[in-house]
Length: 344
Image (cartoon, rainbow, N blue to C red; front, top):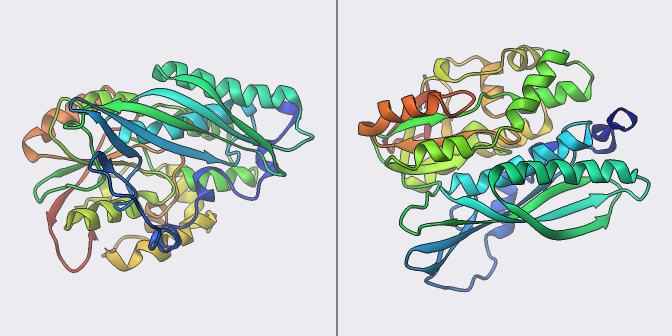
């Protein structure tokens, strides 16, 4: 059945590359009224990954919502990726996902079998995460879209935020970079089967392993690297923490095929939005243009970017190496300077 329909051909953009640009989003949210509540521990004021609301002294709920157009042609795989991506926001806050609701848009002429497979993919990844899908909402739309609203639990004193990084902290990343470029190449039928399969494996790998490995250490800041790119999300972390970061570009695992595509100009539209948003805050040094393009590349279901205390760094690296697809020690936090990020 999956061979009868090419989902990516039904959408104008794919995965997290469909996100509204971070700069535009900030303007849209800038003057919205908010209701003050001391129990709202995390709202949208710091562009964090999820909201956190304290229920009692030792329990808070973590809530997020994420959905997007198809990033894979196979409906089951699309469902898996969308669910993995939505669950990631809970892990990025240090939480454990517990409940989820489906969000779905489908064309009227989409085969029922395809719709079922999308949902089955989402259910499978939620089951792997230990979360229960207990309902949802669907509407007709010309383009298919799927995702989840997810609720998780975390201890209020043990949640992570995307700000709070301190000078001396070490930065780690848990998945390779280049998914957005690969998906752009996929839309042009340019991917080799082996590259396509590896791309799917990365996007369907839960960040549960990373979260579980990190909860025993002194995490000062954490975010998942998704549509705003490695540099976009790092910029948010640095600006929210009033610090800067030095990045060892050679320590970042760039997907080799993605780098080659970037060198010949195959780039997703979201890369340009991310560059417009964050390039003013980045000193690229002598970094190759194509490498910079990948660092601005919108990721779908990317890894966690985490700042941990220097004293925990070696132990964290060892723990991550057996728990995540690609453990990388990518840089360090320094006192705030003229730029937020320095590539070396």
